[in-house]
Image (cartoon, rainbow, N blue to C red; front, top):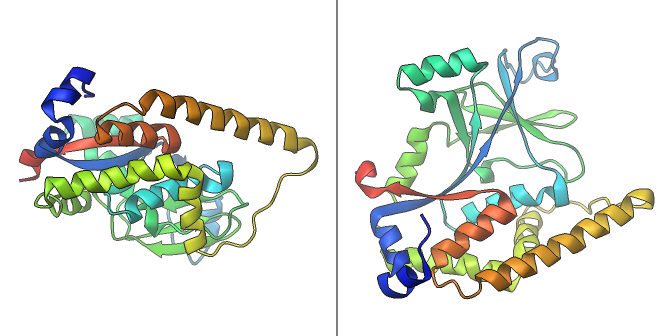
Length: 261
């Protein structure tokens, strides 16, 4: 729920938002379901994955900018997660819903646990629901251990933030907004790439160059127009939500403090 300008000016929306809830940045993804043993995960003896196997695809555009922005959100002290589907079909989803166990239809990943082997190949995360390990696949699978497996793990992380002073939380969100304003989303993502020392990425040449350049120009124009419209918004929470949504396709949610208690 976003405030009107009058509410922002008179009601202290940011304080109210954080008094009632703890912020969570979450990106929803739909997994691809692998049912046959002919898939590359089943052929990989090191993976030890059995169908149904779920694949969460990561967006390759702009050298995986979206993924590195998710890592930047998490690295800057926020609770940020991927949430992806983990049911084989609609029948399984309906059964969990009727039992009041809809959270069991999905799984979650902490962005900083997913390290990409390169910037140029297509990557997806392969997993079995409830497993403590998952694999990043491109040409080969690279395993990684998961500390964030269930929604219960996320709730524990959110509970740890219940007693953080509200002023500190507002300052943290304000720093995030200032980064978007000062250096922009691409350089924020680049900070994460540099931390992980990725080799020089492929530069498009030949016939694919004009569309790439045009896309970047359009993106910059859209960012400039959006920032011009939001510059006078007083609520740093609202501005953070807008930037996270447009730059990383990520929602800023408020998780009820009463529910966390």
